[in-house]
Length: 356
Ligand code: ADP
Image (tube, rainbow, N blue to C red; front, side, top):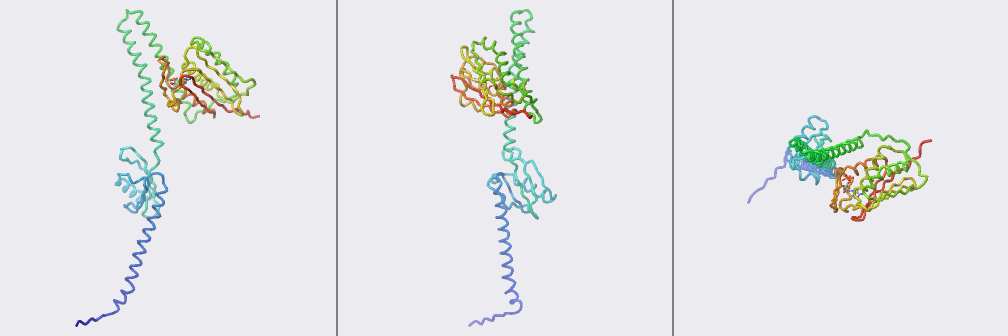
């Protein structure tokens, strides 16, 4: 038989109290940390962009958008720097596609940092838009320059070819004119898009302006054998606008209508007041615009696909300018088009009462 002697001294007595106490403390500590983690998880989940919370050098919580991020070392370093310097830091990091992204580090609690990736989708879109734009401008400039260079070297290498040289000089002059127009339009767009651009607003008799421009283009319409109609509602009020820009807008729209309408067609312009807006409609019976090109025709340098084999000169800047001018006047620009039947561009400009 074994004899068990249970000794219950002061140490055991103490252990009976301290061990459960330690257990409660450790459990409480884990519970507190889990609560904290869940709290931070809720915070990062509320962000639409990748976000992390670091405690010390360890990621504590992160959202769904952050799961694909590969450069954890950069984040650890950033959070360490934020803690050390006790200040917000915005740092450019690189994602898995080697694209730059801005990450903002904020000290949110003792030893806890919040890292937020800034939304750069708009910036990326703009960068890609301008890359395309510069490529297109380069292309637009290169074509006439190549033609000019070719004809210039032809003229210098065969000085006795009088007829050939006259033709080459004509082509050079035409291409130089095209280049000047292109550059002028680009400069005008840049001016209209500048944040400090101000319209030279005055009272404009828009009806009289339309009449004047119709008169200016009537010879061109006649040469192209296109009928030109004008329908003006009598007694139209003045609008507040920049006469030079409004003239440019009407010329571009009319020029397009005449360019894209074959001989025998008609261009009809009507101007009327609808409530508080002046509505100017330019309708042609031309070749029309393919439906899938319609959303893009107001983009700079965009030219729609054409079914006609007739060559039509242009740079794809005319409608971009029209749109900028209409927007600068707080107006509205709409287009309806049907392939093979024609297009209708409608400009609506607000009639603003002149201050008494
Ligand atoms: P472009 O200098 O090429 O005429 P725009 O910016 O004025 O450039 O117009 C953009 C494109 O929209 C044109 O290339 C053409 O395809 C289309 N377009 C504009 N106006 C008309 C129209 N009245 N009829 C048919 N197509 C048009």
